[in-house]
Image 1 (cartoon, rainbow, N blue to C red):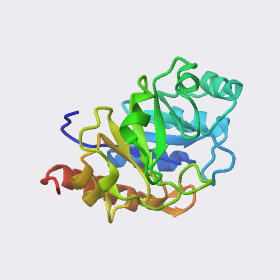
Image 2: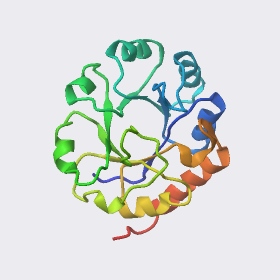
Image 3: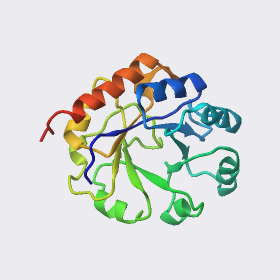
Length: 215
């Protein structure tokens, strides 16, 4: 899919000031983690407060990991989410049951047939590709081998996994994804973002957008 600029999502937002820093830097979306085992978990009340503070045209994404449907429904009644992100072993039907736009996270385990797996999630607006580590649904802080990503995949790709201001430029030039997703790479502590690193990350993506693809 063609695009003029790589979209940017800053995930794991837990504070209003970090959401505003992401918006000020030019991020397209923020991610809110509704997974209790994550150090970036955010309570429903805090998530609603963060969303209410955002300026217009910044998308809000809710991240869930094999969550109970009733819990997701509760979040949706109280938090104005634009997009759902399913980061566990959810089936396509489980992703679709809430009637909301969604993306599916896939971990790049060795030997994965990405085209086949993606075909099973045909209603997803995109697929987020993350690093595989056994027993960990995401947020490893480690990059995977970007050459694993097929160049002819039709579904929009959100590239994640160990991205930072230092390597995101190369990642964008190699993969040319629809979007990139960062969490730990722009933090001073788990769940606490660094506004300077957010700005550096955004600038690195924009610089890569202006450069030639690395083959």
